Image (cartoon, rainbow, N blue to C red; front, side, top):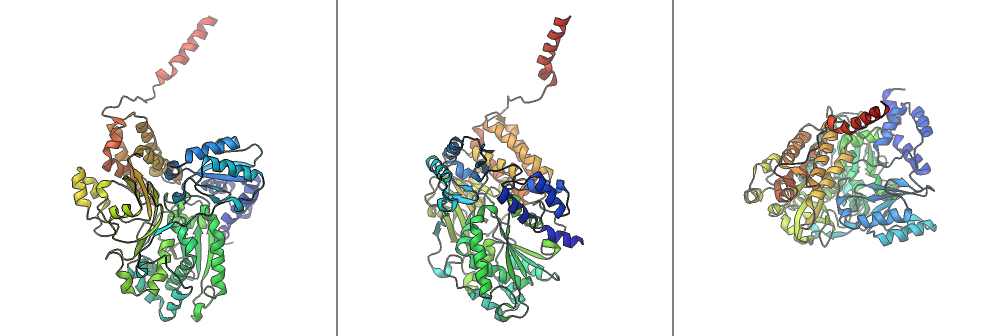
Length: 608
């Protein structure tokens, strides 16, 4: 068997692991032996793959496996109350399984329900707006034999705002299946790519790489096979816009992927769906089948000879880092979802070593609209650098959490008014990998206009000067928008962020793996009021080292919030630190062994 065939066989590994996990609730030693033999791999390598993913267990996880969301928005709602109620009614602590193996209780990071907290998944059925009373009633009903399907509450879409004029709306308006695809009968693949380039569409997951250029690079790489991958691994805390698009506009996504396939010459597409969105799987499969029945997927689509395209669904298993494109591809190939070095970009050698496009859900959903709209009309929406609209997932201290589709160019202060922000003091913009915004930023606009190199903002020491100089600088975002008022403890919020990155680091590179752990220890020291000015300086120094030397985007962005918080909220840190620390944590072997030596001396003197 050739190496390529071995790799291809490995692509089914995740499905096999999922089948066993669901059937037996854990993957046993015997399972590992059999799987390793079947896939011609070592048991150690397989163990490494299984342990990498949060939702694969090596011990029985219970007939009903409960994952309680422990993200910061959940903790600001009823998290503590719900956790206490679950531990009480199940008589176990978090991380354990009941003696009868009926229930397993575990924590997990953001599950894409920040607008409906506190939330949890039970066997991947969603439960939202939980309280202590609700979960006790829920557990009792499960014990009585009620099905999870009958008990769960399907998440609300909570679409709070879209432009009032329909011709200014990109996503949330009526869509006629096949309308965008029919435009391909009049366009060559190169024409489609040019339209996307002219539209200035860029990656909406947060990287903002020009979509048309990415497609052009892929098309220009000759190959017998190419792939389109939709990155639906929406793991950034506070983000849930893709969940709503997948639920309300799945047809838009399928057409976007198919158009991309036509443009670059790909014949197969995959939707990499995060495990936390398992409840959307059936709808997506249903949509794919309907497109196949309408002959909008398959061979010679719309009578265009050689236009062949199929869409498949691939389930993730719980790993934030798989949002990074090379980690996602590694996961699909049956490996640990670790980012690779960029010797080759996916458009050159991606999935199975073939040219591959990886685009975000929102990006792909914008494509059909661009083809069906007049290009000049599309370019008239938003700003010159960032035309069109942007979707935001809003949560936290506001009256109207949910989904917002706004034109690029809206002032941040106007957006805060729109969401009903309550005395906003801190905005986590672009998720945990984004940045902290303070009132000094509220005059800035949400756009890609007048962007500056990231480090320049750190050159301003005076808040007034910062506000004046940065007011004309745009703010781009992948879509997460979390609002916190002045009553919230910023240090504990930052600690939650750092703990998240400690847990989610894939561990392959030392700066990210060790650096974030060391930062977490510094934050604990500061939270306990034992920090000093030197600790802040070391946090800044270490954060820069992590940013500059980490292997992938996770590490490079993991300290963004911490650095921008130190810059913009110095008073919050000053409450917890001293100019000169008196906290002594050095290990002294003589002090540590003194009591032991005294005991030995007493024993020896007794026997003498």
